[in-house]
Image 1 (tube, rainbow, N blue to C red):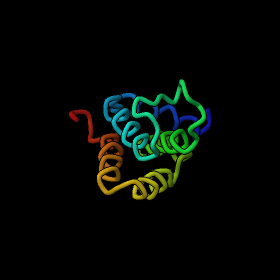
Image 2 (cartoon, rainbow, N blue to C red; image 1 turned 120 degrees about the vertical axis):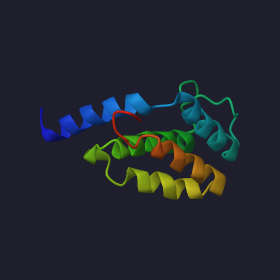
Image 3 (cartoon, helix red, strand yellow; image 1 turned 45 degrees about the vertical axis):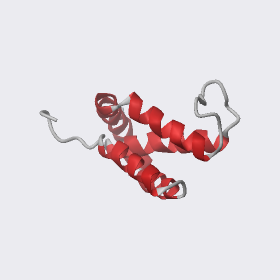
Length: 108
């Protein structure tokens, strides 16, 4: 494996350790409401809402960046800047979600 692959493997391990589906779904629902999509919108059942899907994919990329994967450099900046277009509350929710992926050591 090359260095980039090792970065991704380590980042995915950290991502899986800290991922909180309820927080992710809350962000998804709030974004759907802002975009005037059904709040119970599912990326799986409705692939036509490109703006929603693009942001949620960017959010996952940002999480992987926070987890240490260099491949996704600057994804967190893009996610935070994009979240500012929705609302301050939404931006704070996104920041808190990203912050939850910061590795604070073995006792965290």
